[in-house]
Length: 199
Ligand SMILES: N[C@@H](CCC(=O)N[C@@H](CS)C(=O)NCC(=O)O)C(=O)O
Image 1 (cartoon, rainbow, N blue to C red):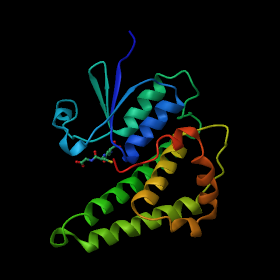
Image 2: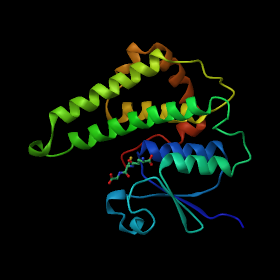
Image 3: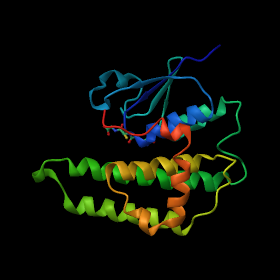
């Protein structure tokens, strides 16, 4: 049976972008619906956590960007983004990128709270984690094979671009290896066509 795949996504979610990019690289056709997750009551019946991305395949729901990427990869005929060789390194680096996305998102959500609800300590904590994580990526950088895409590269690029979108690009001046790689990687069509936007 041909799968009917719906991807509920947002205009700027880095987690959602990771899944959309995976579908483009793995040439999986899906119906992407850009929604406002904060008003998406209908999503609760599929995903009680009510987060994007959420994937619905013939009515069956797949939650969490990592699971969605694994699923899309598993039904593709293209080279896997999760090769057995280096599998755990790829998974671990992907989790580091996810953590960076999470910190940038948490920081952003806190900064837009009203002044009497905002915690400057919390914002500071996220900023320290963001800086430490990007520094770690620079210090542990390995040269990726340009001709073999892996999931961690997609996740790191989405996380860094989201950092620029919601925080700043100060990291570029201190991270030459990461910057060189990133500037090249974002020129891929699957990155250009999925840039985050406000709406
Ligand atoms: N671990 C989840 C995180 C997804 C996530 O945090 N999504 C955010 C948007 S970027 C969301 O839906 N937030 C809605 C909310 O917190 O109410 C994943 O990897 O899919």
